Length: 144
Image (cartoon, rainbow, N blue to C red):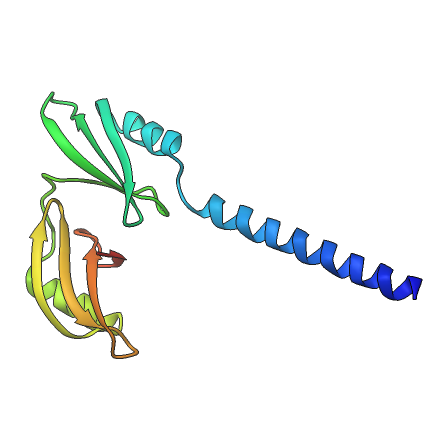
């Protein structure tokens, strides 16, 4: 009886430890607010304010190196900064081709907005998705 109780207690302790480690690992995958602030400062942005987390991205307002006001988004996983006045190196056709290469079908409503491409499509499971696409690489960086 005692060994059965000991095994149950050990099993419960291991399960609790595993959940704790999983939660810690998940939290470490996303950029924290101080890290986002630091990333912007390191890239030369000043007067960073209104830093908020929404839809997997940090959003902020700041001043660029030339003093212009700029709205920014920071990918919480990669740390990539997306200023709203960014110029895309890709055309709509490039974005469509990139999405199809990544397995998306029925790509439509492709628009460049606030330094990022957005599009609607169907994923590999056939589900409708709204995508955020990197303006330089054409890689999907999130959904909206």
